[in-house]
Structures are given as C-alpha cells and as structure tokens.
Image 1 (cartoon, rainbow, N blue to C red):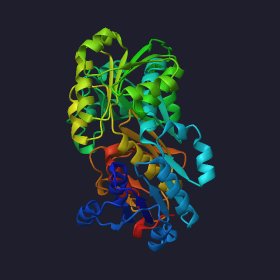
Image 2 (image 1 turned 45 degrees about the vertical axis):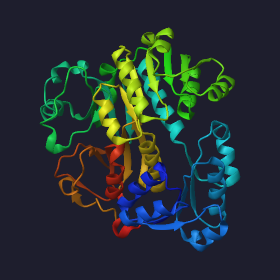
Image 3 (image 1 turned 30 degrees about the vertical axis):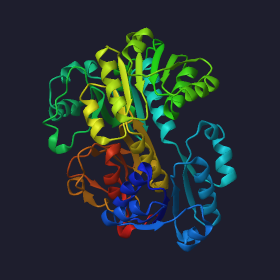
Length: 458
C-alpha cells in the first residue's frame, strides 16, 4: 500500500514507525530538510522537502497514485486544505489531524465539505479515555467487552480470592475448570499482558484488577457474580492541571457527567478562553506546582487529579505530588515512553500517551475490513477483533511460530461458532476470527502480524 504523510512531527513519525511494520511504501513530505535527511538515513522511506499545501508539489510526487494520504502538520486549517487538495487529486482515503474544539464542534460538516475520510485528534482521544476510566469506575465497577462470541471480563481479584498469590499459569490451571483464562492484569494502574513463556513469573497480587476471557455466554453468566453492578455517584470533585486542549475536552466531558471540576492554568489569556467556553468549571489562574495554591483549593479532598500540561516533566512532578497527597485516582498524560515507565512505578493509576492512542486509531482505519472492532482499555491496551482473510501471513501457522512480542497475545480464536482458548500449538486458519490483546506500544508489531503476504491488502 502506498501511503503519503505530510508533517514529520511526533504523530507523523509514530504513524510511520507503526506502518513500516507491514512493508508499506511510505513517503514523508515536510519543509524541514535537516529532519528529512536524518530520517532518510534511519528509515526506509521516501522523503520530499517542500510545502504539502502546494498543488504542484503534490502533483509532482504523483499523489493521485497513493492509497492513503495522512496530514499531521501543526495547524488545523493547513491540514484541512492539504487533505481536501489530496482528495481532489485522486487519493481514495484521506486522514487529517484536527485538534481545535471549534472545529470539532462541526466534525461531520468538515468531513463532508472537505471530503476528509477520517479525523484524528490526540487531545480529544486522551480526554475520552480519561473520562471513560473515571466515569465507568464511579458508575459501574468492572465491565465486559465483546468481540463476536468472545468476551473479556474485568474485575477485582478479591472477587476470586483463591487466585491471590498464584502465578498466572497456576491461576489458569484453576480457571480452566470454568473454561476461562486470565490474559492480563492491572497492577497499580499499569496493564501487564503475560506471554505464554512468562506466565509462571507473574504473580496475582491482592489489589490487582484481572482480565479473563471466554465464550460470551459463559462470561455473561460469570459477570453476574463477579461484577459489581451497583451504581455509585461519588465522583464529585476533579482537579485538572493544564487548560490546554486535552484539559478543555476532559473538563467539558466531566461537566456533562455532573462532576465539580477545577482547572489550574498558568496562562492568563488561556484562562479567559476557558472561562468563556466552560460554564460550570472553576478556572484558576496559577502554577499547578504551587503547593500553597493547591492547598488553598483543597487539593487533598479531590476524588481525582489529572495532569495534562504540555510538559512531561511537570506532569511527572504533579502526579507524584497528587499520589503523596493520598488522592485516590491520579492520571497523567505522558508523551515520552521513558517517563511513562517511571511514572507507573510511582503507583499512578493511569498513564496515557496520546501519540500511541492516535497512531493506533489511524492503523485501525487503514486496515478497514480486517479489523472488525477494537476497544481501548485504560488508555494502554487494545482489545481487537480481527477477520483472518486470504493471504494473511499469520494464517496456517501455530502461534508458537508467530514470534509474538511481550505485550501482545492472541487470547481467543472463533472458528465458526466454536470459541478456542489457544495454546502455543493452536493454528490460526483462513476464515477464523481472532481476538488479540495488545499494549498500544506494540502497534508496530501488530501491523507486522496482520500484513498480507507480498504486502498487499484486500
């Protein structure tokens, strides 16, 4: 598949990394010649120096011969114009990054008017995942995800106290009697997906949330006993550090839920914008790292604290402060993988990387019919339902030969009406529907796994 990308920022480069896993032909267009020179030496891509807004440049690269065009420059208006131009020149699928709330209020109008097939917005995606985590946690504890006849159930391990202290492999020996399998754990907010090789090394601890998979009918019955369906309404106070786009989107969502929200924002002009566009949210002009300010605003009495500033270092510090203050739910937006690992070690409840989330969304859209459904879990992992079609490289092989990376596993195979909980020797066959559980950081390997032989997609 021929794919062109305009914009070599963080999102553009992450998308390239993911798509390179399936032998796509990729062209990157950017005005920064020094950046392109560095990338051409380290990535197997074609680089074009220039402004993607110029019709002559797009015609010169033969943009009409490409299958997909993705525009991820730093300006919404530019992405809209570039995307519309590429569509006019004959590209079948156009994806554009559009971030501003004013534009997102007319989402469908923009798509229809400018013939953009898919819009990506990392800021809104992060806010949606945080909102989903908080609202679901405080409204319905635990839950079930469905994929055809396969279901994934999440619950606190205290509901199956006999599993505490066991290794994952031993726990699965117990669960086998109920035709279920433990496939992932959430430890201090970090999701762990054990491979077949290391299941004996991962222990189930007292405060873990666990994820078990099985036939849909069986899981639905188990959920009646294991999931707390009682509604809670105690999410009432949330503080957000950072009034940028992510903070704005999240505040608006939580406001609609009925929570009392405070935003701490250092930029005075931005505070004025927030106060104009958010009606029932308290906007505080100040530095979120100012302990005196936090104490004045009853920081320690918050049900949740979310750090979405534009600086990873600041989000790291604020998450540590919030955790030390005893706030129950602490969530941080972190763009650098190394910081994500560090912050998880502090016991922060949720760490999200907006670039990983949006790169995953782009890949799902490009895959089209191959991906029957996908659902993100805690902003860190993905529950993916996939149809195995003709020529896919993983068909006809036992799972042991697929060389799956740590953090990605095939948790179920649906063959007709039969649900198979696979082992290392289970073969995936054409016509099967498989369910994969994958960390978002493994998108590169997932793309390689799903490629069609000879690099052709159908």
